[in-house]
Image (tube, rainbow, N blue to C red; front, side):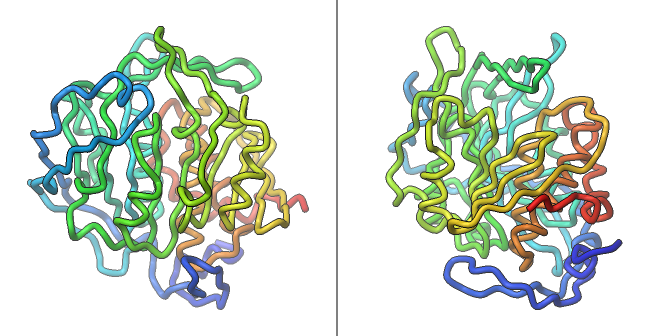
Length: 360
C-alpha cells in the first residue's frame, strides 16, 4: 500500500499535523482495518414520533422540544484502537427505477467510515418504512418519525441532478445524542434537508475534526415537492468550529459566491466536480486534486463518501491534499455499483489513493 496512507492506516506516525479546533494534531498509532463491529445499536425515542409542522419538515427548522436522550436497546463492540466517528443527519429512501432504496448522506458516510475501519455512530431520524438491516454494523440512535425522508433523484447525462421530496422527517435535536456519544474523533454533520443545525451540534459534541456536508443546508422544498436552492445566507458564527466543509457542483447552483463565503469561515473547503476531481480552498490557497480512473455505474453517494474518507484522514493527522486523494479514491469505489452496493468495498480506497493525481 504505497504512499502516506499506509502509515496512517497501519499506525505509524508520520509527523504530519493540521490545526483542528486550535490544536496541532499528529497522526495516531492506530489501525483503521482491524475493527469489525459485531452488533447493531438501536435507539428508541417515542416522544418524537409526532408529526412536525410543515415548515419544519420542508426547511429542517429545529424543534423547540427538548427530548430525553434515546433509550439504547443494543450495543455494538469494536476494538479500542478504532477511531470513533459520529455522523448526524437523516437516512433516506431514494426512489430509483421504481423502487425505494436506502440512502442519505448519513447512510453513505456511515458505511464508508466503517469500511475504512472506524467505529461509527449515527444519529438519524426515520419512519417504520426504513429497513433496519440497511444500518447493520453501525451504532445507530434512530429517532422515530412519521415517515422517512424520501427523495426522487433524476441524473442528467452530464451528471446534474434534479430532485423531488416525497416525504420529510422532522429536524434532529442534539439532545437526542446519548451522553456517551458526545466525544468523538470526528463529527460529520450530514443534513439532507436542513435537519441539522451546525452550531447546536458542534456545541454538543467534542471532536478532533468536524466536517459539514453543505448540500442539506442549501435546499428548500416547493409545495409540489420539487427541490430548489434559494441563495443560502448564513452568519459565520453558524460555522464556528467547523474544520472542513464539503460542497458539490449541484450545491452551488443559485448560490453565487458560496465557495468563497465558506472559505472565509472554514479552514478547509472541498469543492467536488465529479470526474474532474476537486478544488481545495485552504485558508486562501487553492489546490486541485484529480479523480481515480474508474467505470462509473451510479454517482449516488459519491460526494458523501468522499467527505467521510477525507474527514477521517484529516482526523488522523493527514495533510488536506493527501486526505482529498483518499476521499477521491473512496468515491471511485462507491460509483462502481448501484446505490450502496459497493460500500463494503470502500476499504480498497487506500490502495487506490496513490493513483489519484495532484493537479496543482
